[in-house]
Image (cartoon, rainbow, N blue to C red; front, side, top):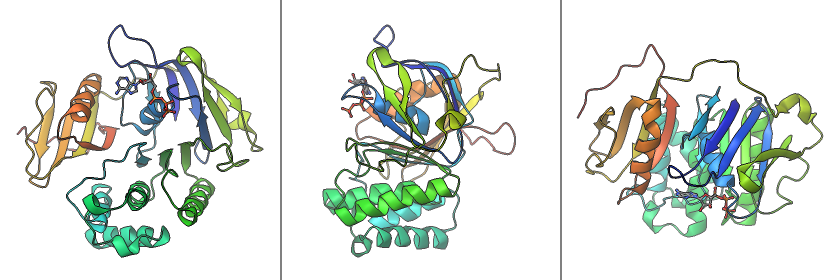
Length: 302
Ligand SMILES: Nc1ncnc2c1ncn2[C@@H]1O[C@H](COP(=O)(O)OP(=O)(O)OP(=O)(O)O)[C@@H](O)[C@H]1O
C-alpha cells in the first residue's frame, strides 16, 4: 500500500497532526511506528487501517481485508465474547459456523476460552483486550494494525501475540504496530517509522530485512485516481437509530441488531466517520473500504 502526501488535521484551519507523509509498504512487511506521546502514531495507524480518512493526500493499494486493534477498545457491547467474534467473522465473509469456530480458536489461543459466553460488558480489562485482539485476527486479514495491542494482556497472551504477528508476516501479511515497550518484537520489524515534530514522518531505522527494498519515502504519485465511493460498516447498540448529521449523500441500511452500512462519496467519508465516532452512544467502526465499481449493489436508503 502507498501513502501519498498524506496529511491529517482534526479541524479545518487547525494544526496538522501529520503532514506530507509518503510511504510505500509492501506485503509481508512488519512496520513499527514510533514517536512521543501525542506525536500522531494512533492517527497514522487509523489512516493505515482505513478507519479514518486523510485530510490531504491519498492512500492507495490498502489490502481489502484488515484487522485493527484500537488503542481504546469499546468493550461495552451487548454481545458475548464469542458472539461478538462470530458476528465479526460473518461481517468479514465467513459462514456462521466457520466464524464461531475461528472465534473460539482465537479465544483459546489467548487463554480466554472460559469467557466465550460472558457478556463483553462483564469482561475484565485484560480479557476484553484479548477479545479486542481476537476480533482483529478473525478471518485472517491481509493487513493487521495494532495500536498498543499488548497493553493489558497477561504475559502468556503477549507472547502469543508476538508469535501471531511473526506468523502473519511470514504468511505474507502486513502488520503495523505501536508499542511503548522498545523491546517489543525487537529486531523483527522490517521498517521503523518515526512520527516527529510538525507531523513529519521518516524511516528512522530498520531491521535486517533490506528495508530499502521494502519501504521508500516516495515522491509524487503516479496520478491514479482514488475510489469514487466508500463503504463504511459500523456496529451500534441494537435498536439504535441512524445517527444525526450524516452527509446527505450517504445511503444507509440499518439492521435491527445495530449493524449500519453506509455508502457515500469518498470525499464525504471523513464527515461520516466523525459523526459515528462522536455520536453518543458510540458506534464501533468495523471497516471502511473503497466500493468496488462493479459487483456491489448499493442498498436502499432507510
Ligand atoms: N479525534 C481527535 N480530535 C482532535 N484531535 C485529535 C483527535 N485524535 C487525536 N487528536 C490529536 O492529534 C494529536 C496526535 O494524537 P495521537 O493519538 O495520534 O498521538 P499518539 O502519538 O498516538 O499519542 P500517544 O502516544 O499518547 O497514544 C494529539 O495532539 C491529539 O490531541
